[in-house]
Image (cartoon, rainbow, N blue to C red; front, side, top):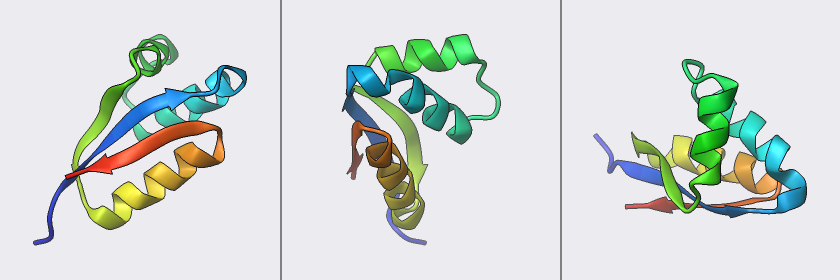
Amino acid sequence: MGAAFDIKLESFEASSKLKTIKEVRSFFTSLGLKETKELVEKAPCVLKVEVSKEEGEKMVERLKAVGAKAVLVW
């Protein structure tokens, strides 16, 4: 088994807040819009823990594509 990583949302551009919320919500089907908005607004924060490097890199790239700054933390 490979190493596990956490995905940390460091910040997001104000103009892309809605896109960031929608992207984060796509990672968590169990979260409602309000809960996702509150999570994003807590940035910097850890969004997801113990993901594979491959999954984490994909999620970070998707967040960057909508104007958010996210990193993998080991």
